[in-house]
Image (tube, rainbow, N blue to C red):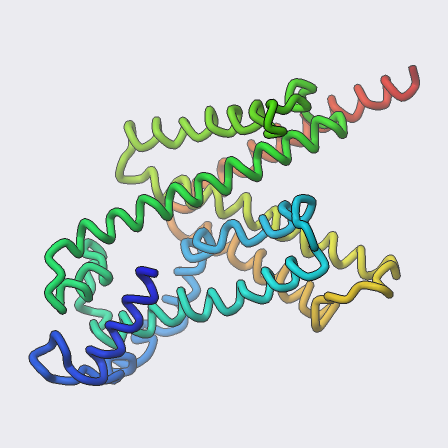
Length: 296
């Protein structure tokens, strides 16, 4: 609702000059002040490593498949709506913001949302945006805990996670998995306490490398699935297969390489091998245990 309000109010200011002393702003700020992409395409490229973090969560559509009442209808609808949400809430909002304010006048310290609402005389603009940001962060946190709890529950039933995560509460909620997810989240609180200036960049960078791996596995698994010739009756197929699969994989690799160019985001490449090493060693123990149980 806040983003839609920004777009509507912004369009009125751009076309009529309301809140800008009656002078219509127009869209010229998109290509003036040094032109479109004044620092070249490299600015867009190096922004990808942080932008990717904003798209985390789209893969949760697959996690919810097991709980959807009519997945053959609801999942294609949800996936198709993702494109429109990106166009409206990401691209649409950016077009309005960059039209209202030249890029060289944004300092990164004041929210463009606050500036826009303040233009039309809303005194509590900063408070409103802070409330929206907090609720959005809580929503993102909630989705992460939701997915982690259910994935731990599934892994436990496949003997790939501790058996304690098989238990559910009286309301059929994998409470132990959600509790474990909550405990890990406290690491973020500690980082924010000890290194408040770098905490956000560090967390987003490490999360991004995890997302690149997860998305890469999803795209590759889909590639193998389509090759298995089991998709004759599938009604919702990805267009452009297999070219689009390889384009997506190459794009993910490119973003991983870009992480190395900034000292702040480079930490993700240091943490990733350690994390993947722990997972690989843990998986070997799990596999040996499962093989031993099967032989018994």
